[in-house]
Structures are given as C-alpha cells and as structure tokens.
Image 1 (tube, helix red, strand yellow):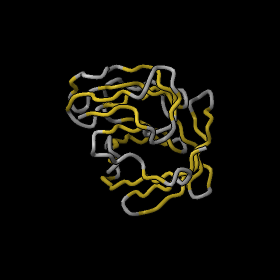
Image 2: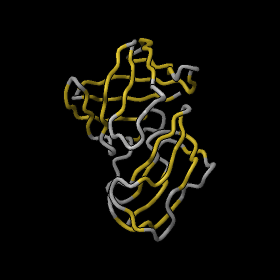
Image 3: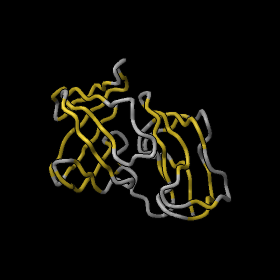
Length: 165
C-alpha cells in the first residue's frame, strides 16, 4: 500500500493506494478515507504526454510535470506536491541529475548505458507498476554517469535509477 499526502493547488489530500489492481485496470484508492474507483485505460497513446484516468466513471485528461511540480487538467493548472508518508520523503524533485523512481515497480527495460549522451525527455528506462508500463524520461540533457537500474530489478519509491551529469 502507498500512503501519500498530495497537495494540489494548496489543498491537501490523504491518498492510499493498495498494491493490487483489478482485471479492468481499476485501482483500490482511498481519498481522505473515502474509497474512490479509479480506472487507468490500457489503450494509451505511446509518446503522448497527457494521460487519461477515469474517476468514479468520469474521464479526466491530465498532464503531470515530470518533476511533479504541477498538474494540468481540464479544470485548470495547479501546483503539485507529493509526500510519501511511509518513507517520510518528498517525491523526486532532484535537480542534481539523479533520476529517482517516481513509483515502486519493476524495471522491465534499461534503454541507456554509462557514457550515453541523452536529451531532456528522452526515455531512459521502462518501469512497470500495477500492470502499467511507464517510460521514465531524462529530466535534462547530459551524459549518463551511473545506471543503477537493471532489467528485472524491483525498485522502491525514490530509489536512484540513473545519474546524469
């Protein structure tokens, strides 16, 4: 289970996500103690920066900053801050070149090696969580200094995956 404090536009929400998913890609999510049905459609468009989620049978298109500073929905643009209560750490906001796991999961592909030159936004690895593949992208351009992730490695929230100079 993930226990998070999520601030959206200054409004705080306590979020719990159980580590299970249902056959329809629905998640067991509790917001401020109330169970909310959340569904993540499987037919996502690869390379599309925005994503769709369905909350209580209502679709929402969302765009989240890769550094988790903001979120944009059809309702507006909001500041975003995510705090993991279990690790007592703020979700990755590293500007020192360390790319941290934004969610716990399984590394299924590593797409770079030490010494590679990468561009901002370039896919570095694929992380599977709750049966969803997530491309983890470079936060900035640079040279890959360290690759800590390997295919098949299980990672926890905020584990360092790649370091870029």
